[in-house]
Image (cartoon, rainbow, N blue to C red; front, side, top):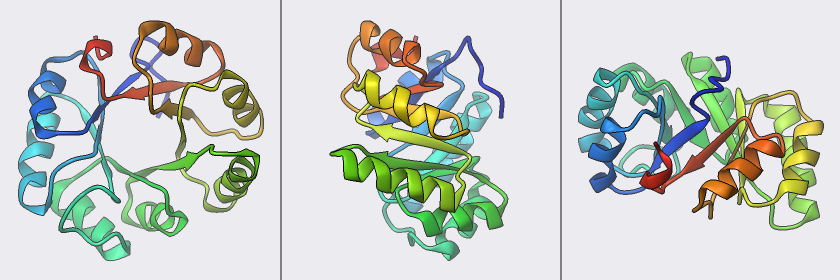
Amino acid sequence: MTKEKSKPIIASITNEEQLELALRSPVSRINLMTGDIATLGDIVRQLHEADKQVYVHMEMMQGIGRDASGIHYIAGMFGVDGIVTTKSQAVAAARQAGIRSIQRIFAIDSAAVETGIRMIASSKPDEVELMPGLMPRVIRELKSKMSRPLIVGGLIRYEEEVREALGSGADYVSTGNPDLWN
């Protein structure tokens, strides 16, 4: 997937009330961080009909195993475009299922960043999401040590923070703030 410079915002839907806002927004990508096995099909259908790509956060979806079988199931049954995960094994399962993967890493300290870099090199996700996304120096350093598109997210609430993250090397910014989806 090539970066759409005109659409660097990814809508992170954290509750079902945000679905209608995301459907009407100009974003082309959705990180779905709410829902369950019973609602996923309808949510994915609505988002696909609105020409949105849907990435399901495996650790936040209820009623679906966070293993290879669960990933193959959502790929085949619901046609999701990809997954978001903290698990390297899930990245490999997504590749086997023919869908994309975003590996999420948390920069809580220097050791966690180094561990994340090793995980990325080993699992080879399609994209990486760095949490939290309010760290320009860490964004620059991580981007310089990998060749994958970098998404930053978490705690981003203002346009200035979006601009700073993109200016520091992030390819995309994911946010649950609907005001920033436009």
